[in-house]
Image 1 (cartoon, one colour):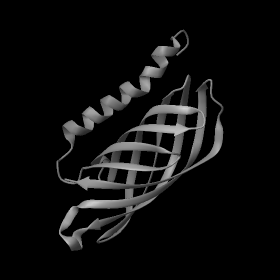
Image 2 (cartoon, one colour; image 1 turned 180 degrees about the vertical axis):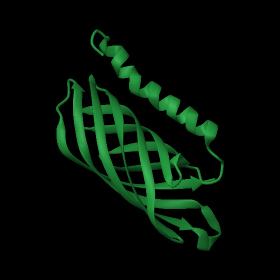
Image 3 (tube, rainbow, N blue to C red; image 1 turned 90 degrees about the horizontal axis):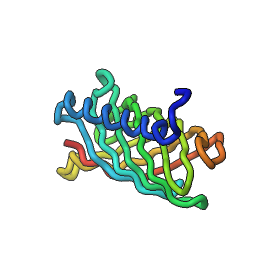
Image 4 (tube, rainbow, N blue to C red; image 1 turned 180 degrees about the horizontal axis):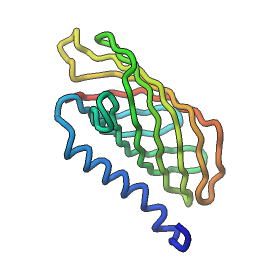
Length: 165
C-alpha cells in the first residue's frame, strides 16, 4: 500500500464491508437472518444486520454501523463479526465471534480488533419467536491509525434487541 494516499486507505475497509454485505445478501436465504440495535459501553449505538450461514454452515456474518461517543469526541464506525452459536436450548442461545471495525471522526481513525461472547433470549413462549433480547461482552485492541493512541486491552459490553426473519 506504499504510495497510496491516506484518504484512499481509509476507504478500503468500508468498501470491503459493502462488498461483503452485498455478497451475503445475494446468497443468504431469508430464514435465519436478523436485524438489530444495541448500545452499551463504550457509549454508542450500533445497528447491525446478521446473515445466517454466510461464512459456512453454522458460521454467521454480522455487518454493523455504529456511532460512538467518548471523551475524545464522536466517531462513526463500520464493522464485521464472524459468529458461531455454540450452545442452544430454546429459548436461550450462546454465541462467540470475532471481527474488525474501523471508526472515523474527531480527526482520528481507529482500527478495532475484538473477540465477543454473548447470549440471546428469544420470546418464543410469548408467541414472538422473531424477537430476541441479547447481551454480549467484547475483549480486544484498538490501533490508532491517525491522531489516536493505541489501546490494549479494550473491553466492551452491550445490550440489544434482534428481529429474526
